[in-house]
Amino acid sequence: MRHALGWRQGQLAAKIGFGQAFISAIERGDRSPSLECLFELARAFNVAPARLVRVPVTAGEAG
Image 1 (cartoon, rainbow, N blue to C red):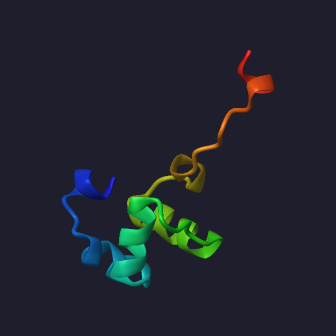
Image 2: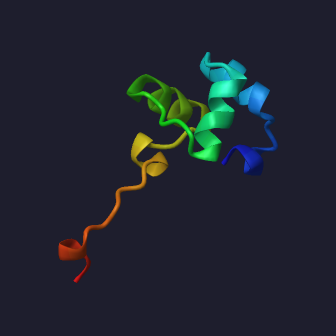
């Protein structure tokens, strides 16, 4: 979403009040956002927080 909006990591970080290094770590998959960060990201992107969350499917749920 950040790329689609043409925002740099630093721009997104400034919009949500978190550091650019933290945004970078989230994008690399090295860190997970806190609930607070998730809600700030959703607000910045103007989407529901659920849109930013991937829920893994277990083998029992797949079929």
